Length: 206
Image 1: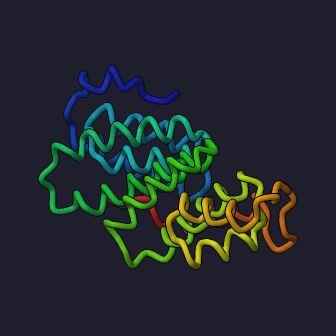
Image 2: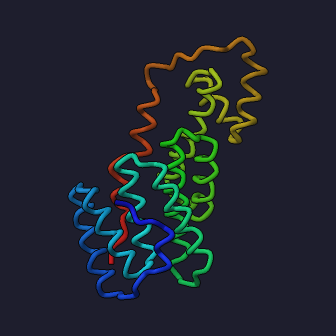
């Protein structure tokens, strides 16, 4: 059962037990046993509000497609990071924004997902993963306006800003209302891009 955030303030500080539970959760997550991993990370948080527990918990929720929970815990992680002076803060913030992007994508909040992935990209501009996800959410937004995949790709080449790309397409294709997608692309393709096996690399070790 996910930890009630209101109870976090009652955490009993015991770093050793926290890490033990965190390591147990990580092993379970790597085996794909996300339900038990979630319980382990929750136990870890009762002993210490280590940001790594939050992020690993969020990643489990992403795998479980519990996007609302992932988003809620990522928000809590961001509030903690604002008060942190750790040299790892930038990395953790990147991962948190990345998770926020994934969660919003899963909730079909594509515009919000773009905002979060953009923040992550600013923190880690060499990340090809984030660049691909940004492209994906931009395309999804354009498809939702009734344009084809081919139209979306063409517009984004000339107008990287999503809103400008959509305006361009409305001017150049005023009668385009089709919701049919090209064979080479579908919403499930984006799901594969955003929720692929590479996200296992985002679990944090101890």
